[in-house]
Image (cartoon, rainbow, N blue to C red; front, side):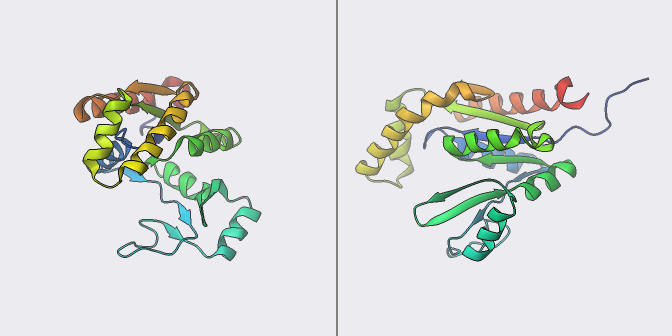
Length: 205
């Protein structure tokens, strides 16, 4: 008899959306409430900030180390942001997924597109990739959330709103998209997507 695998397939769940959409909070809650789930630790060439730990917050690499990884094709995706570079190692993701550890990533829309493109050439990752776009309920609500965070001045909030206006146009390129409401409702939606995808026959047959 052909039966289901004893262990559930591990997924790479990517959440994206404009700043203030709640994706970071959702990632943090998924990690807090699921023992077998980890955040993807990416690489960067920037120096550690106070309190950051190598291998936990980032893999901190020298420019030479980063160059070597690029040359050897070891990054699933990488990009330069201002004066520093950031990248996601294929081996980090593949090793965790093979150990049945679910992974979550919180990256920008451009980063998701790069991961989706690269995953098409890596079946071990592509088979497990699930992307979700979190749509703000309105720009007014997005502005309110950004103000409540208290991290940005009005000029920066205006810049983030302009970025959001561009980012929402990418929602059709994701596997799932939903309009953000309350924190509880959004988490229920993410959890439902995650659990359903772990049981999708096409992934496990």
